[in-house]
Length: 278
View 1: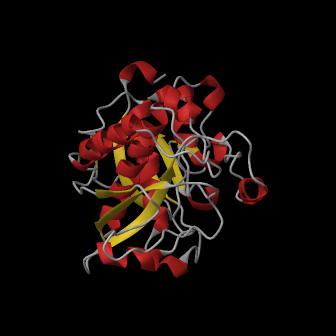
View 2 (view 1 turned 30 degrees about the vertical axis):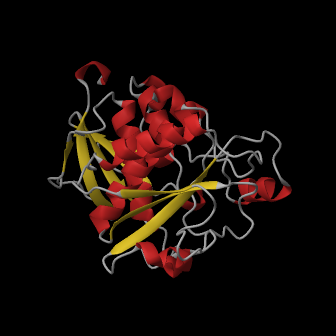
């Protein structure tokens, strides 16, 4: 899956053709697999396949993306119990789903704030939330004007520098990534997508452990009424598991808060492989 992380891009412009029966079958198989897995905090998610741009056949409500996606006919939405840890697990599992879709050469894009949420209310119980959806389709290599504007405004092709995201011993000491055996693995984490490319995760290496924290963007996306940056953390945890060759189904995260001075919010820790520690 490491090569898939390097390969995947957000696709907003699709070919007009519908998915083949073979590809639809593959997506249903992926959905079944993802729904059988729990995230690091033991929450599962439910995925809904929308083949014809409509959420429900009996009460048809068209999926609206406010012009941010072009030509997409097929979508998958995901829902989870509305809790902080549930949202982290949603990001973890939905990102894994998106990477698996990329593996079968189909395009996707995370949509968190750019789709009509009210249309999906018929799928939800009071304690559930749909943090994100994704179109799925054949990639049109010619970007639309809107696609180019969105990518530029969100800085979708850029990532924060290593020394902004990764630290050693304390949060005053950036990781010397040029002379560190973890560089390749950490870069896979650095490439994780996030809402508006904010990259709120921060990682600290200390005593052979990689500690994961969140640096929140003040007042960000309050209109969504759910913690979208918790979803971002889940996405980063998914990339972390893949980067260190761990099982996606049984991630070995620890949650005992370390004695580290910081204003950042602690999430979890993972023991680093011995051969990567210098």
